Length: 251
Length: 255
Image (cartoon, rainbow over all chains, first blue to last red; front, side):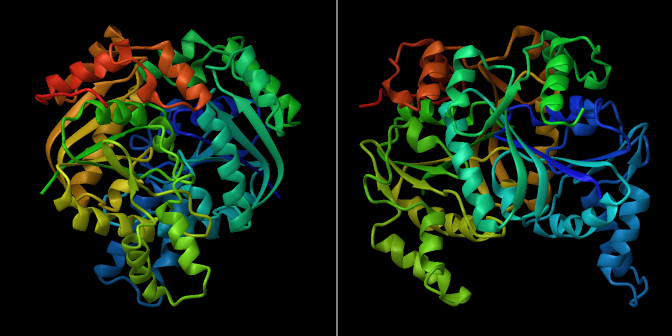
């Protein structure tokens, strides 16, 4: 069974950056899932899904529904058809890790259904991997949907603000009420952290693993859209993420 | 009918900061602010303490009503009742405020959002302006809380993701059929001339950038009201300039 890792946090904290850099150090094969409708993980990994002919989960769901409207076999429920499409059309297979992205929906209504379909397939998918890593959308709503009901490592990426402290409290409250089980809860400071803010959060009562070092190269790569996979191994951001993962027993 | 303005953007760009300063300068004689973010911090940034005033967020009210084992179909009516009892609408000096709040039950924010949508529809006529601070990302747009927007402000950080965010946002807005009169781009406090040169290719109207201001950073770290920052501070002044650029006349000072 794969170790289930979730990276979450407030918007803009650096969840995707953390996951993109993490993907270098995890023992392959890992599965990375981008749960953010405003997706960017694939870009950061240097993968052009469209060019690769890959569909997002939302697109595959549209496909399954359309097939049905055009006739399709009434004996195959849309959900089962979707499962087939997920394996074939959505799974990007890379070297060392595979990627699935949720995608952007342009119909009215929430992401409950695509998330629900994904929840049903995650446990089946995860049998084939050593790690399943989930990059969450900003905020709290995705937690209410309890997509992974049991998490091994939960990384909370923080920015140095009072709002992050409040976020820790709210996050734990939602997890508790929704019934999500987690085995490890880790705090990670983002690139804006300094020693003073680090000290502040060490007193938050949770295990603080360290901070992602400020790295001008990350800023440059993100501005120009250059994939973080190309960041040199000895850059401050990479080294600090590796150190954090070592502390969590993951690298 | 009041004008409806919405502030949106990727996470952590500074939507609430912009909203708070915008509230300071809007000359509307009556202003309704909506914090649509479950992880919201707008009340704190405005120095509004809902608990002290005995006010509920929409999610609190929902929890309260559902906790009593009511039938799902009765919930909207019960929430309306709480609204009429004055449990939800916060009255500030210059603005009123409604907060979505954090939901603790399993499931999405469709119902709370639907309630806010209805509140905006009914309350709109009592205000000159309704100003909505959005949660990060795109999902709230799919719920179409505000089908008709006057001014839509998108706050950008200096990343390629912000440029892509604009494309995706327009894709969702078109798909779910939200109308807006103006779309304005605003650069956040980390924006640079280089970012302006690289990222503003969407052809949408760019109003300028919010000036970096250590006072904002300090305020946010301590969880203090942004309205205590002097009006002539760089951040505050830059928002004033941005609003002028968008054609907002008669900008007033917060009293």
